[in-house]
Amino acid sequence: MTVDTISESPVPSAETAYRAGAPRDLVVLTHGIASTKWILAPMAARLRSRGFDTHLHGYFSIRGSNRRLGEQFSTRLHELADRQPNRPIHVVAHSMGSIVTRCALLAGVPENMGRIVMIGPPNRGSHAARRLAPVYGWISNTLVELSDVPGSFVNRLPRTLDGHEVGIVAAARDNVVPADSTMLDNHRDHVTLNSLHTSILWRRRTADCVESFLRTGCFR
Image 1 (cartoon, rainbow, N blue to C red):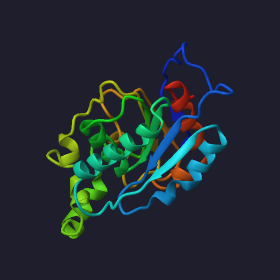
Image 2 (image 1 turned 45 degrees about the vertical axis):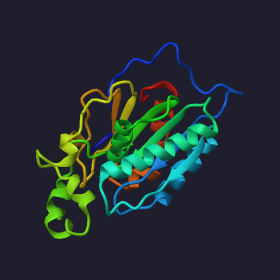
Image 3 (image 1 turned 180 degrees about the vertical axis):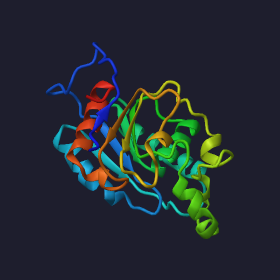
């Protein structure tokens, strides 16, 4: 039987859990390919009930490029930061949204950028994207970019995100992005949950892990 597993990581002693009366951090949630921001609405609702403000970021994921989508996401993060520059802005990204987030980091993010949680991210590519690219690649260049072949766009991106705390949530029964393909070279913590690629978004356990990482920088 597969069980939820969490990699060991020390809890930063200088950080504490939610403090009553503290400003509510903003969490920006973004989706993956061929999806919609509303798929993250249940998780957003759970995070709001736990003391966060949330914003759902949607984008047209089929056309264009991950780099361009990342630049657009960077612009959106700056717009949100300009409204309230004194509170942290965290990002929770699912699947391809994690690659868009990495491209946003390369384009530049606000100084009040907080922590990042990637859920099912194809950081080392997706075997499903490789198999589907010959059939659907003419429709979706972003799909081609997610292939797990060595020279794909995603495998040419830097695998270190210096200056940013990143937590990765993988699904043990993911037929799109296996757990070993989710890894970066310098992520802060990693957890594998007994779930599927998409349904992991709707589990209370996932929301627990996301909340823990956003507050403490580790999964508990």
